[in-house]
Length: 139
Image (tube, rainbow, N blue to C red; front, top):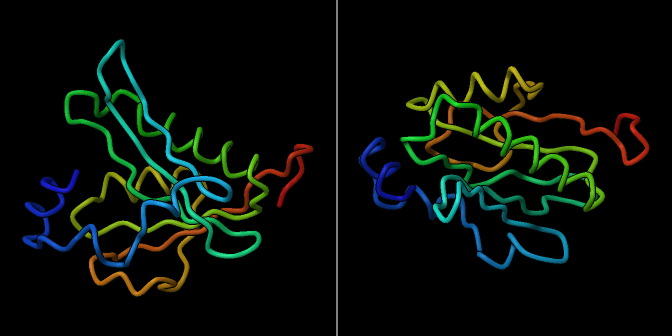
């Protein structure tokens, strides 16, 4: 993922801005999911807390041979389910101008454009979605 983003954006610091500490993607308020096909890791993504009721989806990545097969959508859905299980009512995310496929996916999955919330200099789209509540209701 790092190599691909550095190549796309001609920037070696793409994964360090905004700051993300690995511990944020773990318990008790974060998680990181890995998608596998057999023994091969084909995708991954995590979420971290932004506030009491809002999380941020980070580092979603699907290996090139597995793209355009629905893997990213399944990963995003799994992250949203994990967010609800962790008690979040809203999920936010961002993506850059050279990843229009990611923005299309996010918008198709209900992420509405919002103002820049994280000062990511590489992002051109910031989105937020109300998550279904644990009882099936909204938020």
